[in-house]
Amino acid sequence: MSGLSPGKQIGLSILALVIVAGGASWWNSARKPHDVVAADGVHHFTVWMRNWYFVPDHMSWYPGEKVALTLVNESQLVPKLNEQFTAGKELLRAPPGNVLGYGNPLGWKKDLFSGVTLKTASGEFKPHGAFAVSLNPGKSSTIVFTVPNKPGAWCYTSFLQAGFQYMNNMVGEITIRPSKNAAAPHVPMIGRNGVCGRPSASPLPNPVKPSPSGVGVSGLGQS
Image (cartoon, rainbow, N blue to C red):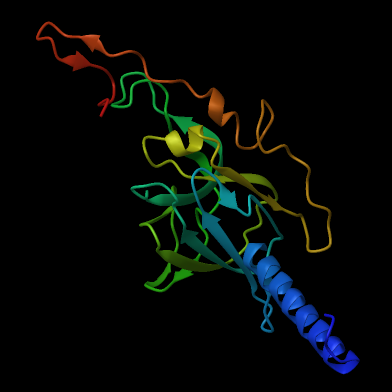
């Protein structure tokens, strides 16, 4: 800053410091997963659904906690894909003879939100069995609920595209602590003992076999 008076040099230094600090603050806030407890005690989370991962890929709750969960589809592919959020444990696979035919993941044997009252923009309801939120590209949705008394580790994923989003390791983990101040249980996300299983080890489709008519035949259309 040669040629400038000491006063102007100090002023420019302060301005540069403010810009850098402000830029760093914006960058961190843009990258940091939304995890905020509001004045009314509701814990707000935002989960961005991308290809093929969630941000964040871990959340920790406790029974009785009020949660507002906002889901955002930020698909980055061209063309962009629909994305899904569903949480549970113990993978349910397509049985032999199913239209999928080769064990693709279909859903959960135990759904985290089954029997839980959920509030959305369209109203209040209580799912019994499977529950999932599927979003078109660029869309978002918020569900508000009280965390159920289901302590332990739960997996969240997307079963769209015949389960291929799950098989591409698009998974995350929810740990429900026994109480507010209790330590979160340590359960691996992926692996033989992982709550999400081994997504990339899921079976691949069998080769298409020609039928007498010459048209390929398999459990699932190969388009």
